[in-house]
Length: 271
Image (cartoon, rainbow, N blue to C red; front, side, top):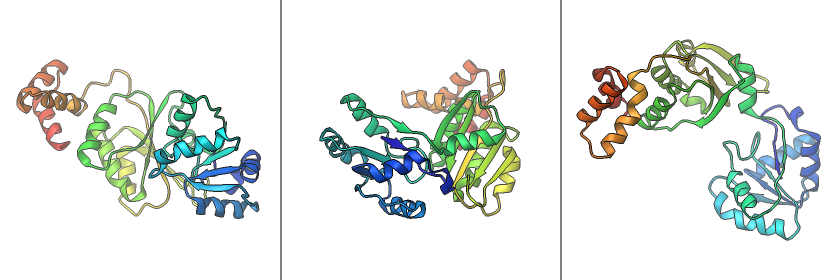
């Protein structure tokens, strides 16, 4: 069973979460020490066996956990905050359990993704969750080029010390006037949601930014003209297929009716 834990405010711990923490035979936790601290803060004790289950041992633990369930144990899976399997360990275990015919259910609860989306002031009827962007500038630019024409609202996670370069990359890829919001320390004492254009948020982020961060970006307007940066990934595909960079740029620029010079510059910048 997957169960969502508070993303900040302990009052968001559901009665079902508390019941399962006190009754489950096995609790697989992203960080067992944080789970113990959570239990102490909630005034309860976790009597079941604790097993660490994080990104570095996720695959190796799957067989062991499924064997425990088959033996009749109730298994509770929790992450440090929010819903397991959403940008946290759990997906591979669920996938393996489903394939093996093991019943899986979930206790819903706090979610930084949905909380940030709801508070952003941006459209919520259609959205995508993109998690963390690649750290390397070239890989990040390529990913954002693929998303430049995305019309759904986009939700990202980012570390506080990387928010400024992330917002700069977003402004370069989507344009400085794209509406967005930065949600910081959600449900905590110093919760803050900044809304504005990507350029306005970038200027704000030039100061020190602290806390857990979610960034929500409005989708591309319908009929927005294609920009050269939108086609960097296609140029790379042609180059990897054996075409010279100059020829690949010329072919894509002609096909997509964008500036050859701007496309070439965008490809070089994304490297």
